[in-house]
Length: 345
Ligand code: FES
Ligand SMILES: [Fe+2]
Image (tube, rainbow, N blue to C red; front, side, top):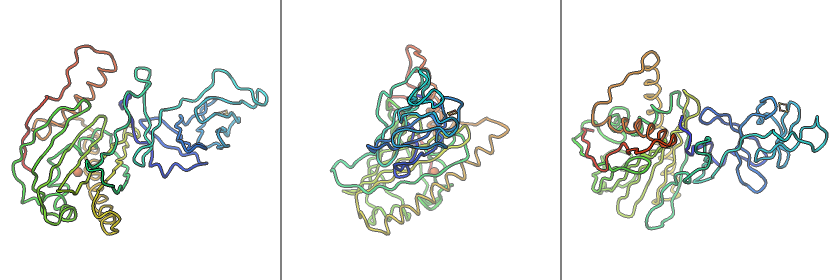
């Protein structure tokens, strides 16, 4: 799992004032606390004394007390008191690791750094907004997946599975045709823009635009695992962000945000978006978990086709990031400045 990135720790509404919220992120146990000012703090969920999870302790105003020997820690991780030393006295060397936190678009983002990248260089990726400044409805969903993060990321940047795994939802299988997609390099990934897409005649796109007028779509991949898609049809605008969140070596969560600026507050549309979003995520989860099964005894793949190139770039971007952190000189961004890929979908 890559350090030096922001990851989604939880949905904001689930981190309630006065509660200790335990979670796992990138193989680290974390406890989230919303302090009196409403700001969320993230600490390692492990007492500095003998390692008992602090989330099993007590939140007492602005401090957390461990249930084993009563050590108290501030919500920024400083040890305030070890009762065995006498009231108010604390061992100088004891503190709990704290992580940078930012709340954005209804999510709590936590920055996972290390000694090479302790401070975030950029804020977490923001959900896009329409250029005309119109108001947007947001929908959020999370889905756990029993697989390594890599296979979940592969799935979201893979064009070739759509007619098979999501048959009938985004595309009718019989409507497949050759596509040429131009990709450009982004500092943290890659982008493809399609200026004049004829939307497929399926239920999803009928809901978005009954007339199926041509659309402009932009699809970005950003490290470490952000898939961001926006579309515009006339004044109608929508976006989808899937953040692939690593929990442990073999468990991952898909954190999904959808936003749109039309028919806002129309209940059936919110309901339909949640229903279809849930169906699509379950279809992806099923195939990602099957891939994980297929790699139980053997870890090889054939990534030789144009439609697999994105998965290759993703692996190269991981190495590029690690090399950057290691201070390797003369590094080349692995994605070409501009390249056309072809596939039938
Ligand atoms: S383990 Fe937490 S106070 Fe001892
Ligand atoms: Fe998919």
